[in-house]
Amino acid sequence: MVNKSNVSRYRELLKKKDILEEQNKFLFDDPDYLELLSYQATVYRQIYFSRKSDYCSLIKKYLNTTIPSHKFRARFLEMVKQDDEKAEKILQDFKQLSSFSIDVNLDGFSSLFGRISNNCLQAFEFGPKNDGYGIPEDEFRNSIEEIYFQLENYLNEE
Image 1 (cartoon, one colour):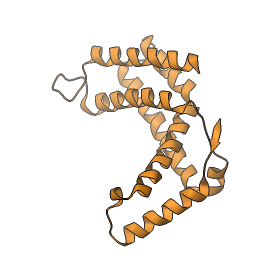
Image 2: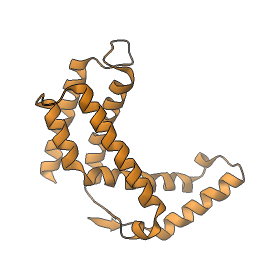
Image 3: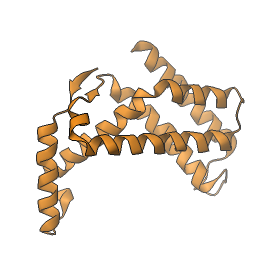
Image 4: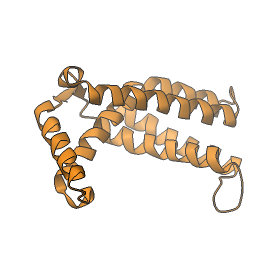
C-alpha cells in the first residue's frame, strides 16, 4: 500500500462543499467537488479491495454451485453495504483517515468489482426476467464467470 490520504486537502474540499451548498450553488459545476467525490470513491474502492479474498471466495462458491444465485446476490450486496458503512465511518474520522492507505493496484480490481456489483444489483432489483431490465439466470452466471476469470487474472498479475 502506498498513497497516504491527504486529509488536509479533503478537509478543504469538505469546507468548500459546505459553502457551495449554503450558497445554493450547483455542486457539479465545481471541479473541486468532483475532486471530493473522487477522493471519497477511492476510499470506498480501497475498502472493497481490502476484502478481495472474501469477495472472490463468495464468487467461487456461486460458480461452483455451492450457493444458489439468489443467495449469492444477497450476500454480495450485503458485503458491499457493510463495506460502504465502513468507508463512511472512515471518511468522517479524520484521525483514521490520516493513516488510511490506498493500494496502487486498485484500479483494475475496482473496474471488475464494479461490473460484478452492477450485475448483482440489476439481477437483485429486477430478477431473472427477459424484459430488458432483468438478467436471465444463464446470462447472469456467464457474466459473473467471465468477469471472475478476468479478476483472477488481474489478481494473479498483482
